[in-house]
Image 1 (cartoon, rainbow, N blue to C red):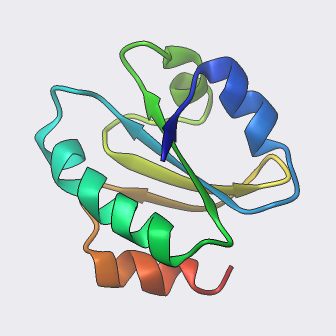
Image 2 (cartoon, helix red, strand yellow):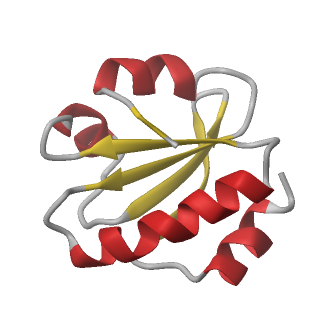
Length: 101
């Protein structure tokens, strides 16, 4: 998983492939718990691209998409949010959610 900026988010979110954006912060406990789970899922679901956005350093995208708490995962394609999940998600739930894409 690669960490990106607001600018990169806007560019990547508009492409026609499915992407998962993890809005997180270094001080967030649930974010730290979710990170290794996302890493595992990203290694298994290679047809989906995964990115991390630090909300402390990149507040614009989080504000525009109404990210009020973290971690928040946005599943996007062509600039549209397909799915949104807030809080820690177990691996099984993420695989089930994303396997349809």
